Length: 245
Image (cartoon, rainbow, N blue to C red; front, side):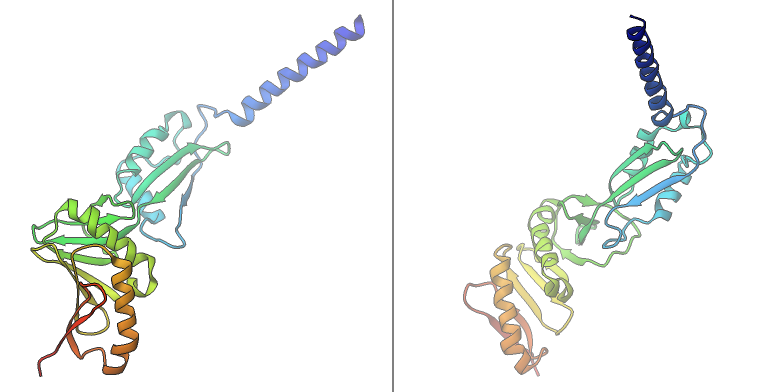
């Protein structure tokens, strides 16, 4: 009987120890000071739209830098809400660590084109087709100009932007998209002094495959500056306009 009681006491003490240990190691003492930030910017190797300095400056402006504050006074949800306001932040995740720090994980928004519409609007469209406003920020993406409203930008131009980014050659070759009043597309290449006329949006894989073949078999022979306009609007044909002498 005594042996059973002794075993029961040992089990109770062990259970109490585990409860205390879990509380000590996983809990966050309210009066403990935050010692620093553990900042991680996702995809920072491939994309540098958000920097650690951006995050620190934003929190400093809002007087929300967590260092030296007691953990009970740090509202991680408030930190997330403020960081989500940054135009290049897709999502921010903030949490307190057992080491006394605030961990911040930043997921970036990736712009794929910039719209400078004839109606005066200036914004980016990101990789999910959403509008991004980032005044004063310069990003190396294709620029779209002309008769563009937001619906057109988030559908047809977004589709074209996704296509261009999926192909390394065309991503580097096309520097401007112009939308005419008739909602037709003209492209300005980096190499060559011609305009590429796509016509109505759509069929990008077919049109650009045809243009690439023409580049390799024709322009490589006659020169990149022979034509002022190359139309790939119609199926199975390319219409070129020679430069006037």
